[in-house]
Image (spheres, each protein chain N blue to C red):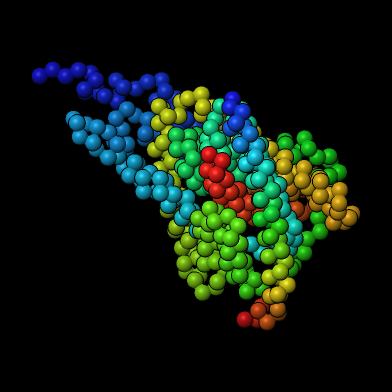
Amino acid sequence: MEFTFQEIMPAIAGMTWKHLVMIAVGCILIYLAIKKQYEPTLLLPMGFGAILVNFPFSAVLTQVQGGETVVGALDVLFNAGIATELFPLLIFIAIGAMIDFSPLFQRPSLLLFGAAAQFGIFITMVLATFFGFSLKEAASIGIIGAADGPTSIIVANQFAKDLLPAISVAAYSYMALVPIIQPPVIRLLTTKSERKIRMKTDANKKVSRTTLVLFPIIITVMAGLIAPSSLALIGFLMFGNLIRECGVLNSLSQTAQKELGNLVTILLGITIASTMTAERFVQLDTLMILGLGIFAFVFDTAGGVLFAKLMNKFLKPGNKINPMVGACGISAFPMSARVIHGMGLKEDPTNYLLMPAISTNVGGQIGSVIVGGLLLMLVPLFG
Amino acid sequence: MDIDVLNKALQISGIGIVTVFLFMIVFFFVIVGIDKIFPYKEEEKKK
């Protein structure tokens, strides 16, 4: 009995340069996760998953063998967790349980930056249509600028399934690159004296438990009334927060923050990677999406900074806002706040911007989820 | 490039950015309101 090389070594025989590129991409993601510690909880599973799925006839993906369909494990996970949007929504419960909204009560006006710093999403959406992307694809690409992985996955999953791998990789990679992307944009748009502005915040202000319990409930009701399409996103986020703040579910809150968050993160990362196959990923569109994603991120940062400068025109001296804080209106929490705090200390070692930066960053988390919900509502209306 | 798609994207952007600001303004008043109605009291600390 004779066998061909293709029958004995199907993976090696079927390997193309595209597969090798994707395996290299997987290795780079793992390198960034371990060596640079860029969002390692997601980049590492994604990197390893990218390697797993880029061997021809890989058993982790569904294959047809001898006329029979053998379902792959990662396809099972994808259909169960991403196609149904279960994993991103469970992540929102974990994130909600981790967020302390009380910094927002110290200076609630900072919440507005959570809206201003979503500017890049919309301008990128318009730009993407220039490059020939459909309205739904453009909206999915724009949302990368939110720096909010789960929201990006949900929007892309509903509007542009084919672009999901590139969009999710871009969203999570750029979240990790906040310390590299934001500072040059901020420096370009601000003067040295603006970066030294000290902000007045009531760091000792305490918030009652009743307020913290009512906050997630009222926000959910408001979101439900104004934009019901955002309820899945904001509802799960606020549900997680209610578990945290109610004071009678400490064990559940801890589980949501740790076990649930960790478990879903592991599954989310490796499951997203199931879409990172050479056939789907090595395309010109992927490069364009990665480029547009950076553009969205840069203009989100610029939106926040410029809005702070605009607000300063109307604020009294002593109440001015450090424009750098505006950049925290993106969703990358708490990394963006830490970066801005660090930049503030570099300009003036006695200027502590951490509290207003955290308040703004929390507002950014709410803002990105709202924009995700709005896009899910508006785009189908416009067809 | 499809002008019709571009037009729609511009309209969605306009509506989207205004609506997200409206949301935030509503949330701002929610925060100020509930903080005024249920202020922090020292007894809570003792509890």
